[in-house]
Image (cartoon, rainbow, N blue to C red; front, top):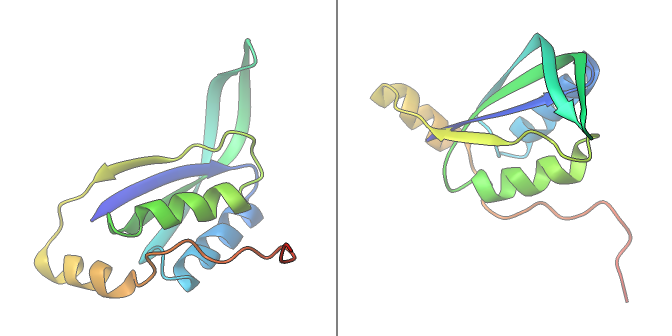
Length: 113
């Protein structure tokens, strides 16, 4: 199991991505919280109100979750941080059972020739 963190520019965007990831079976659950971020971007120090998204998932889902976030995230370089997680056996069983996707979801774009 693992925890994944990203941040988004609005509460609506964070909630939408959280819902999509859980519905796709890429995350067992997600928490959305308000953040004040300070960061360097293109040589300048920036400050922004953002929304953090913390996800519980499995190592098997991590590659597909990364692909999904990159395809649906509004930032050019989205934060995608993952670290291993230890949990009680019953919680771990629930996370494993809830994370069912292991292949990247199909694109919403038109099919190529």
